Image (cartoon, rainbow over the protein chains, first blue to last red):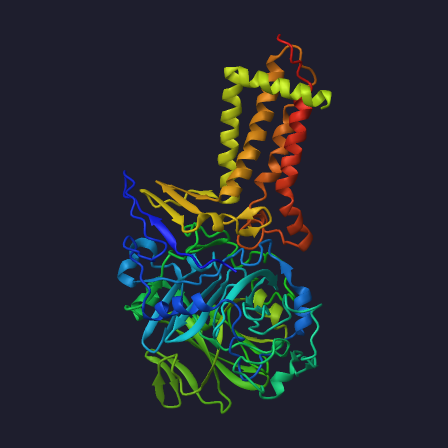
Length: 413
Length: 188
């Protein structure tokens, strides 16, 4: 596991190096504008005691759909060429205010935003591309904000008393995290445990391998309420079960700041030395390199489909019952698009403010239309993120990655 | 020690004794060091102006943390004007070894060209041997060269890329001996 060290800064002004180092023992950061804000101060204390011997991360009540059984997913995993924790998770995140960001972020730079109970935080893509996992605390809840550059996915997870690290393995080009309590592997998009370093040969008796109507495999946990979803179950019983997730909004710094002017922003004071001005894959502002829509994935995906360009962005949602995706550019254009997941009507709704989208269950087929003021459901106009329907966790993903994991997905737009 | 090795060492002493030999060795070695550092991402034109130096706490511990095969954590970042350099002691040591081997190759080749009694010189050998290491740079996930040219990676390819650095060291060392043994160490 990574040493949880702080970075000592020697800051110099133009023309003369003026040493203003901080004490690594006391953590005094007199030369550093970043602070351990309310939540992250707790995060520091939490992560410093998370030795990896803690309990399992909190689990969702129902496991998410899988198209491949966990042992097969383990077999499909490949080395990305980096060692375990070779991409170091940020365990002691530090934040600064929006006013302190200055020119560090350009208006069009991608940030991953989370807002909860009045506290908003932005995690710049330029930082997470070098770390992929940020173990933080939000509103008193230990969480991990994660980002996989190869699949273009940003997802938040509750982590309980443990922390997540980067395994150095990929499946379907997607980041495989591991939890430091059990060393299970957790492919980020699947959010579901597969046998990790703690498994002998990757076998598990927790998956019955049955297939649903859309050609996807369910685990037993899909069909029944977990006996203990608090994270205290045994390690092997966790295989096939899913993490508790929360929405991370993929947007730009300009849009996020406009909506959340009091936001905190993750600083480059991560405890690690990286060139945060350089994205090794390309750029989102403007989009080029690996992120170009027509470019190839790094590793062959689990399944291919040419209905959209390889890296076209879709808003994907998956439940225990199946998967659904909405072409994001179409959503942006049309505002509202209807679809179905495993036969149940769903609706995708674009939010112009953050250039993001939300997916709702709409089993009663309520009338949902885009208006100039928001989204009208029946006779009332609502904010796109507050429709009177059940919202399903959804996130941006590159099309090849979504289809690779969920070949039975419906796709709309 | 075999005769080729003895001849190579004697040729190296000649390089060290000549000012033009020293200049060529240092200049080409330095040029390769800079090019290699750019290729593997330790050096980049991402500086934001000004000068700054950041050093991690407990740098010794951090320096020994592996990030991949023959790759270790940087412990310091130096920004100087438009340039950023990430310093990883072990990675930098490997880079210096490579650069030194390249410099020696070129200097010996030069010596062979100016020494009348050298024969059968093949100047391209050393330079070709220097190429594999330039391709060994890895992004967070996967070799940068594959990302740049859009070629899909496989497990075998990833393993192959991990071997580029040791392959370059071996090839460069062999090349030094190959070139050095053909130089007649007696004064012209």
